[in-house]
Length: 317
Length: 248
Image (cartoon, rainbow over all chains, first blue to last red; front, side, top):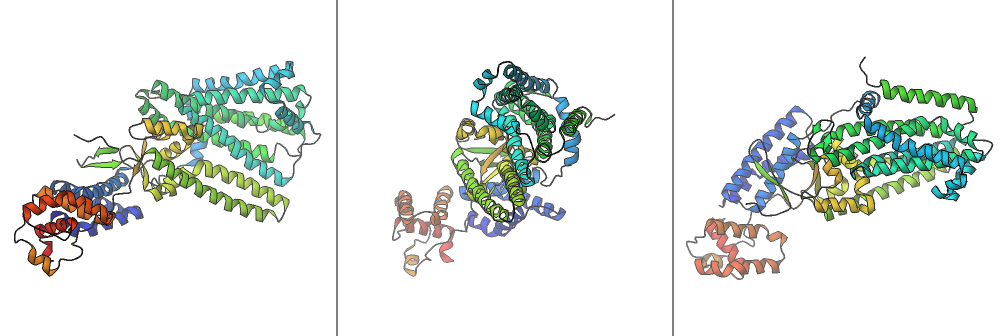
């Protein structure tokens, strides 16, 4: 009998058993015990197969089986629970504060062009048409120049869903493209700031400012801050790639990015949370029939809420 | 010396070494396409349901459209991470093609790593996936930007099926047994090569098996005196006699 045959005859049932255990996944203590025992036995089989010359095919199989078991035994625990509430209310704002000057860099990259666009369009509305296509400007103007702002309930829900898809998507893209040496967020921040500012200035210059401000007052605090935060996260990712220096000090580029990973995710979670709230407000409140002064007051309160969340969230007093 | 190959070699604390086969950009693109089709089908089904339910009233229709938008968002951004997290590294597309996401050290990635590598799809997907394709093509471990950031690699698990015992098929005939010399001596490493060939028999066409067997058959015939009906039969008979499997 060849050694290959001997090995397969003797050990195949155990290999089959380990395969099944891996497919099932480990949950209880005895699962883990069985898995670790199976893993060690397969490692011994692998050593035997190599020294006996049982053939490349057997060795390849055992390597893949042992590799899989190793991955499960030494990998991350599958069901590590995440405290969503703590993540959003404490960890996210703490991480945003910790990103320090990058937050302010993103802040000015966004609000600089926004103010510039607004002022330019206010002073010289024809210049706005050079930044944003005139059809788009007119359709925005149409949307805000009506005398009433109310919507059907069904439309409210549709728009809420659309804002989630569109706005959260933009923020996530703004962060993710930070992987391109931080260039993505720079583009998204400046471009979105400029377009928003231009539209805003144009709409106000054309006399629909009151409706516009009434509409955006409720959700702008959440939405704009979220764009800045996702941009800051993207810049932080880009910085780790370019400089190779994370919050933890000098490291190789790859290590720096990997070390930044959890922190970046916390920031993105914060941005997504803000945008989710913004979508709820924008869809259900901003276009409602509530009198304008109430909406302004509500909007002002929201700025304070966002500010306090950023400033106090997760602080141990 | 290790030959240059698309293989990731790893040594564990138990001093066991194994090799992982890395998945290249093309097979990964294929898995991605498969997932895309699945997502499309699910989305269409959901859209049809939303449309049918929407007939009952305007508010319901609006609500359905809103939920549909949220659903598109979740599919776009959550599909990969959710499946990989739930299965330990496989989306349906990866499962079909036998791929798996693992940490660079072979371990199961954390939930955060799964989320991060899938978020960064937005960067890898730029230019119709050109960024990701460039990254996977340049990196020796075929990692796209998302993998680099999350510390993951994609492995190919297929092609390492559970090995089966080699049997003489068809069984030896009385005639063949009588024709066999009483002692057949083959060097152990030669026997290994022969056995590896016979083990692969099921996955080779008859013509290819014959072709491969013809490479070694003349030398074996000369050294052992075994003569079979064909080159592959000669090789099989040599193996059977040398390992004692002809008496089974």
